[in-house]
Length: 247
Length: 247
DNA sequence: CGGCTAGTTGAAGACACTCAACGAGCGTGG
DNA sequence: CCACGCTCGTTGAGTGTCTTCAACTAGCCG
Image 1 (cartoon, chains in turn red, blue, cyan, yellow):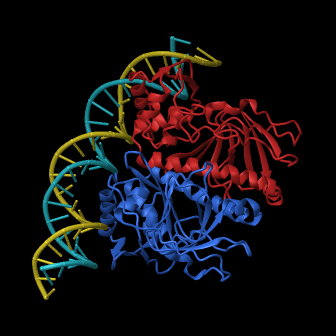
Image 2 (cartoon, rainbow over the protein chains, first blue to last red):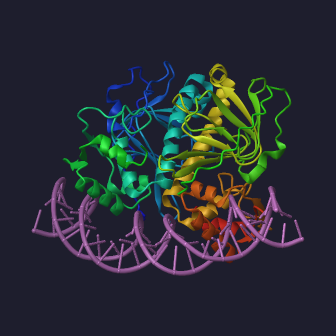
Image 3 (cartoon, chains in turn orange, blue, brown, cyan):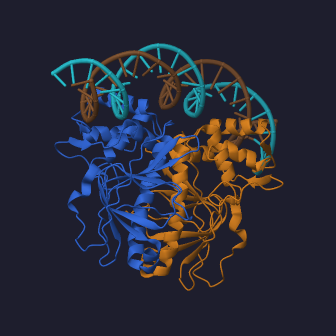
């Protein structure tokens, strides 16, 4: 359980107002957690473009809920804290995902970037006035609900190794998730893991030591080969997939 | 882990086509898990009204996703199965909640009624053609996402007793969830628990024995008094709330 | 070099799981 | 009517997985 306060770097709000340059789709697969092809912005709907550094806070638990955010590029994590400091990372989001939705006046989750990120914010009034924005948000929510369902299965029913394997599979484009394309010829990939062990643990409902042990276990099994920095080579994607418990 | 096949009673589809009687809001608090005041049906939007017995299957994992469902009355549980039979109950839904949403052609969850239920189904074409229905669904999804977030915290970070306490608090109208009204004078309530221990366990990511032990523990502490059938008296709601870990 | 953070690994312990026995409640049928 | 079978819930004993606590290493930056 992470009891120590986590560093929250000062907000870097380089928020130039809306400009009409088209969103960049090239970097959609940052982190491998772009799950969907919905990083398109409804034409002519003025949202405010924001640029964030890696590991900056976009919203804090308790902030006034004035806007809804859509990720164009980069990765964001949503988390919640229990009063005694236990943290759960709720969702890992990539481009096309939406966050900042709440039924109350305040945000009930914390949102931090994992990588440098381009985010569009729509304030409440804008959203309420635009069916196009609403439709886009609804489509996003649907996909994220399904991801939350899968994550509930992971948290409720999977072993530590299954959790870590599932997490790693999620980082592989086109595999593991809904649109898994199945085994391919040369079945190995290198992925970036831009989370610390503590963050992975908080996402998977484990401790950092258990996550570390699971990684080591998979490495001893020959399924993982550690690379430079946060690079990990998955030696046999299909074999790893069978460890997830989902297939 | 529940390995044995669960009984799925024959589907009781008493689906009289749309009639114009207004939805009954009286029974909104069936089960205490009506979290929101959104059991209203957009006027003039023809959905198909369905009546279900308790414990009948509304949708099965793998069914074609032809419609979206909104609960008018009663309680529904959504669940997912892992290939080896482990089950996770993903959401407990009350009146006003929506289910059957998916990004794929097939449903990825199973939906069963817990109590007799009145449900309206809107088929895909209807939903796509009606902004009013879409807006209603979006509003529901937002609330359900927040509930899923809370549940992820429970599954990832709470102890067995905290989980059971949280579950019980959820059954108390106006308490525990988002709109908690805080302590009241005579702080005890009787709630119905229309789930078996196995179902509670599958919802909370525990085993039925652990759930049973947690109930017994809370009873020995004087927080619960068992009643007839599935009735449980919560002797001190505020005290139980402090066991949830959330406050 | 020293200090810091992130990650790994070991040993011991706690919490939840597994397996098993037993009891209460309920409907069926002799 | 009671015996019987069945399901659901409770409780105990033993086990296993994950956590906790702690030591140690690698990499990075001043």
